[in-house]
Length: 391
Image (tube, rainbow, N blue to C red; front, side):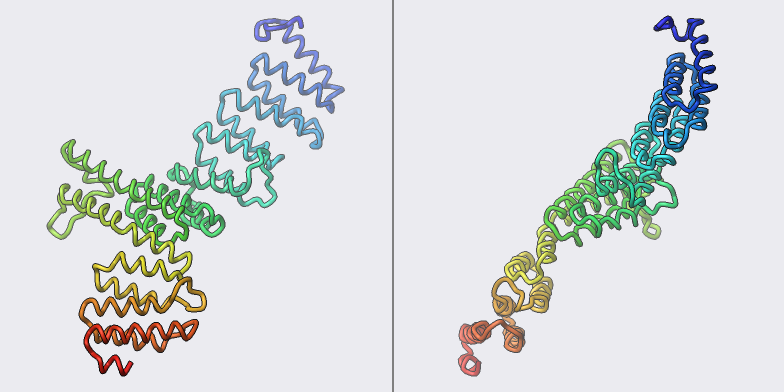
């Protein structure tokens, strides 16, 4: 009370410190006295003295009473302003209380020490006994680790395979597949590996199994290509590109791709990506249920103007769809396949399709009868009455 707000200038503060020191000679096993003494030193702003006093306190008290001291020690170290001292205090704290590692991560992120934060998060994710004081699930902690690795790839330790880390989550957290693919691509983008990022996006849009994940990955892919084009256009407007850029136009023999041609190639790549979207989306639906007859018809309609693609689509459809598990009429795929050849005047191949269809498995006799009827009607439309009678 006599000292009040004059902790750094009052001579009585030093007298108070001496009184505490004398008291601790015989009462050094009482945490209350230690905490009051430490509060006194903190108000006096004695940095080194406070640190040494905390160390003495921890050595004097039994370990069963350390939980009274560590929160105060960490709070003082964090507020004191010396980052390295605070980091050391946190490291010592988590040796005593592993569940304090999450608060340690928060402090490291706030101080911009993302590499150390990643290391600590890895330890959290590997510790099966870790219980988050804030109530976060292991999924949330793991996603935070992926966020840090993707946002600060240069800070990730070399011993950590970020690519394998994020990919391992694709099987563990099936509800976050789209986000994880985007994080993996973002990791490569921030490293400047644009081609690897494109490979990741391509793998994503061709492997995801839900429309939601596809939309996330495809939109991110398109935005990435648009940003690359915008950056290239800005370079052209400013008078040229950077020859040291990893994504710079390549040399082809003695010919160097010009910046203008490179821009056209990028624009064509983006246009092709947007054109492929319906087919990619159709693939997603078929990965959910490859026996969806209606979706196979829709896919064939998308490629109807490209005969090789359409024929391959129908061929895949009749090979893939299992009549016992099909949703829709399987015979309609065979009939549509043959009709595709017929519409292009290729009756020979249409007959081959019908012949194979008659040997295929169906759920019932009515399905097979529909194939025979369609075959006979095709022969009648072509004026081949004898062939129709043979059918």
